[in-house]
Image (cartoon, rainbow, N blue to C red; front, side):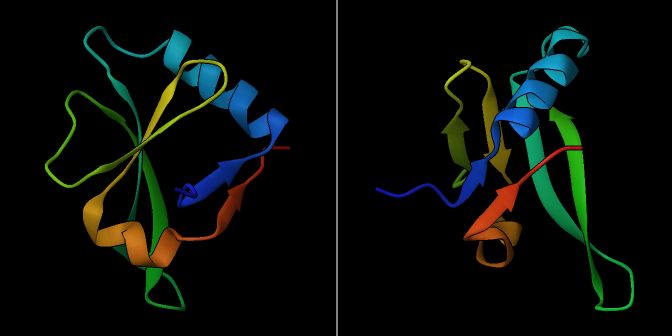
Length: 84
């Protein structure tokens, strides 16, 4: 099965950095959306303390987990995350 999102090497490194300094009990980095901006939606990233029901879990090659908030899935399918 193909993952909903892909991460470039620099984005994966950034996820590792963020999770290495995450609060205790963090299980991954959650990607979602919020109602904002010109298009009506904005991306939202937060530390996740638990995995929600129906949440997609992406395990990066580095072992870190990225979670996709269920309401955001249809907006994030096919997204490639990069970091500069």
